[in-house]
Length: 85
Image (cartoon, rainbow, N blue to C red; front, side, top):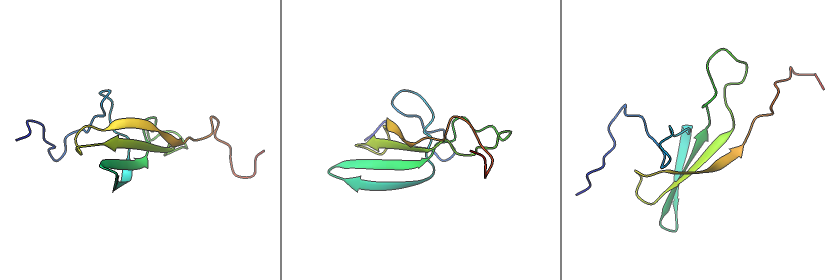
């Protein structure tokens, strides 16, 4: 029996103790490993113009311990209005 479990409403942390950033995420399984990816909203505060900071990607062998693999796509460092160079 596992001593670890996931509870509804509980904050999901990665293996480094940081919040998992995979909002609106998808999950798939390949070669004995689960993969989870979704929107990275770690810098979103509701006041800025950027609502997503790329796509974050995680892996796990047990659906409980998630390792942060990398950010697949990041947002440009400066926000530009449509039509600006």
